[in-house]
Amino acid sequence: MSQVLHHPGQRRWTPRTIGWLLIGVVVILPSLLPLVWLVSTSFKTYIQTQTFPPALVPRGGGTLANFTGIFSNPLTLGYIKNSAVITAIVMALVMVLSLPAAYGLARFKLKNGRDLQFWIISLRILPPMAVQGLFKVVRAAWCVPDTPVMV
Image 1 (cartoon, rainbow, N blue to C red):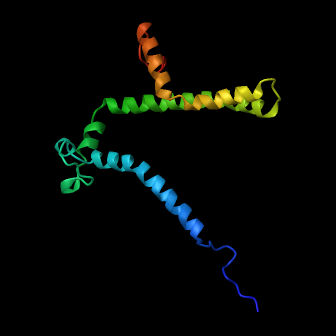
Image 2: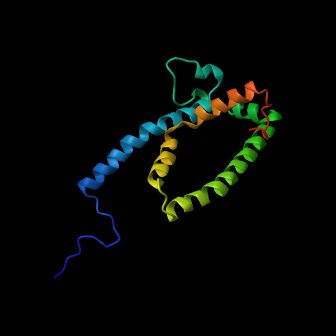
Image 3: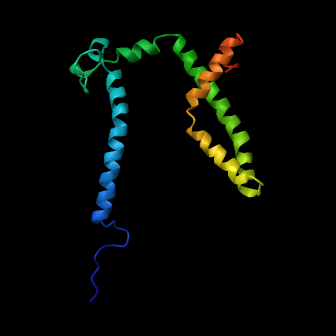
């Protein structure tokens, strides 16, 4: 006389599971609002972006004029190409340099290995734009052109 309360592969919705789900929704939804606002604003005209009170949904169904304006500019393709080239180069450099370093830190015992690992992890707190701003100031002081090769 065995009764099966639930199937083995089926999720049980306990109050604890529902609570964690609600906490996740409460945390994630506010973080998505800026992205929703950004996408919504991209479909508005300039006058609609300046109105008060602001509206989340563009009146009149929105417009694609912003996108056609950007992509009809002949320089846009060059900007996208530069970004793609720099991204590929940086990604390749990171893989070539960081994978052997990570393997070495994980495999070998170093005298101050824990301190080095903590220092590397703590660098993730530093905003990348703070470093980029410093490099831009140095390039300007040295009169280095802002080309993909120099970036």
